[in-house]
Length: 173
Image 1: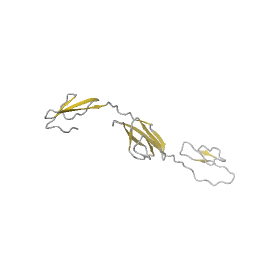
Image 2: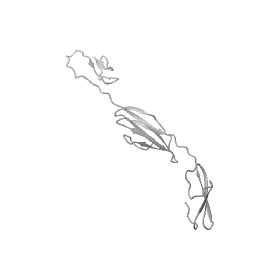
Image 3: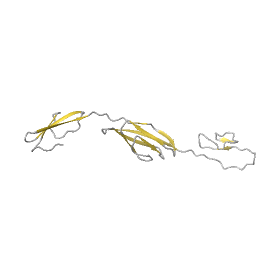
Image 4: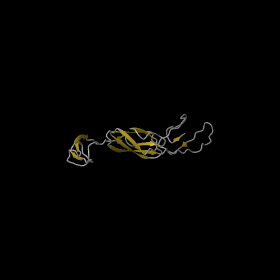
């Protein structure tokens, strides 16, 4: 920004441009000399430092069961914004807690100190809970044994286990 001087100004940049402003500049040092109608002049310089955009990476995709939470983390930038906000504990910061109801892809935009950005993604896969079917409780006499079977899951755990022939399987007597 310039002020003072008299009348029309002329501009002379170190890159041979003669306009009042420049755009799309490469990294480097630039000097401008401004001259007014009385041939009075002033100069100013500035430097554009080279900057590589950040490289944002994440803790990776996650699978969880319906109703569970997971911590999601991003690295490689100064600040982070998470999208969408659905089921997140926060929308900023490098670490958030997600409790989604259905499978979702989160987009993380990381920004460095000079404003350069990079984007990364995390997919959280939400697996449905198994449906366990148990038959109606049969009437049995004291001391008799019966076999009870259930289905709908990959692993089973009967409780209490006392007196069961197979406390970790789908069939027990």
